[in-house]
Amino acid sequence: MQDSGAKTAPAVYTDVTRENIQALFSDISKQISQASFIAIDSEFTGLALSDASLEFGFNTAEWNTRATDMRDMYKAMSSVAKTHALVSLGLSTFVPNGDNVYHVYNFNLLLQEQNTHLVNPASISFLAQNGFDLGKQALQGIRYFSGPNPMPLESRSANINIEGELVRKVLFAMIQAKKPIVVHNGLFDLAYLYQSFFGPLPDSYESFVFDLTGMFPAGVYDTKFIAEKLIPGTASYLAYLYHKSERDQRVRRDQGDEVLAVKLTKILLYEKSDVETKRKLQPKKKQDKTKSDPKRTEEVEKKQYKPYCEHFAAFGHCMFNDRCRRSHDINFILDCQEKEASESSAEPEAKEAGPDAQQNGKRKRVDEENAHPSKILKALNINPKKVPVSQKSEPTSLETTTLDDNGNNNTTAYHTAAYDAFMTGFIFASLRIQHGEALDTLKNRIYRMGRGAEPLLIQASAYASASTTYHQTMKLIDEISNRESVIEASEPPAN
Picture 1 (cartoon, rainbow, N blue to C red):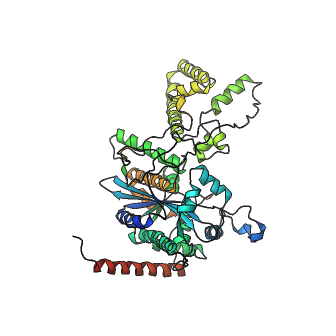
Picture 2: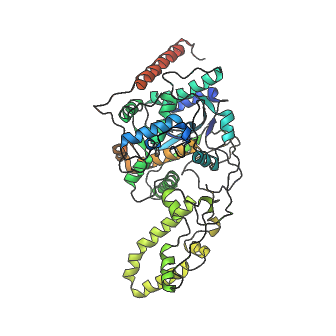
Picture 3: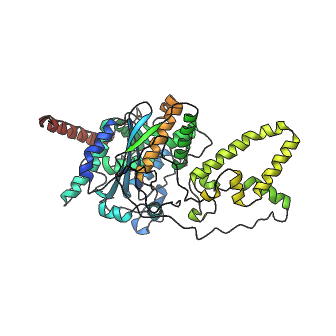
């Protein structure tokens, strides 16, 4: 978790709870129907089963969500989704308002599954460390029953039934809209969404895939898979791609090319408690075995030292977390990488300039890299005071406007499913401007953890068929749609 520069931050999304879902449902449905595409993200109580009590009698060998065989992987993923729960669902609707201009509406649905379910301690710790309010979720989460088939269990509380029906209708609205769905590493998001609001997951992955083709006929795009195909050699985790996309758009603007412009609207002020962490502990330094050889020490430091955490830069996480002594700030990392790329491209020019220029350049680099880290940062033209993760991020995009009730611009937000959904949508829109129709060739290919080169293909097979759940739920969607159409037709026209 990266430190926050402020005690509280106004959110760039509308927080949807059991208290306001009835009032907001029609607005959510409207934005879904008008969107060019819809980005989603979710938070849940587990990605895998680990250290389960023997009392449960689980065969943990069957719960390998990184299995090589897709059938085994789906069986494990289905088991996890059926026994754990969604706790939040983020929707980001990108409504077109001109060429490459979007009005974006972000909704963060706080959820509370009513079925007894499992909770993975690591997942809950991650949510808590990233600002997720577990107390608010318990008291205000939208209550629903997972695995409805075709209708959810009846509760003694009429309010619970209404909440569950409305949150389920959000998914139905997405299905009826027939718009592209955008995810980031979204296989589990799709599985949880299906199990929670569509119906029990099918027994076979072939039927699951067949169902998805019918649910989302405009296709599903996974920005993690797309990025790894179109931008090979770069990190592909969400926050990195988002900030890189911002920079790519600025470069395009400076070059006079088409750029992406988004305007965040429908803001509901929502303050979260401070979750910044303090770096009290430091990882132990490994003994440097090269100290006896000054020349070797110089070579190692010159080659290896970087002021940012290379593991975090590549993968988005670090075993030391907040104790890591090097920066986890993504904007700072990108600053450094751009500087490194610039210096690497300049080396061939130095060789052509002759041995004297090479020696002067070499001496300068050695002096800088043997210096105190703050001097290295100055050599990178970066203010060392901005290195800690408390550095504020830049505005959400080139033309983003986020206004609170007082008309003030707000650009800071905590980690939420809604904000992750927005970043996913922004990356997709940015890639679409840069690569155009190439994105269509990567449609319906969902990234598989540990098997990035072998995505899940959302493609109906001639040897598979839709599941019973699909037939029942799609029939229900049609019935609800027809019923609501009759009601609307019978209402008198508005004056």
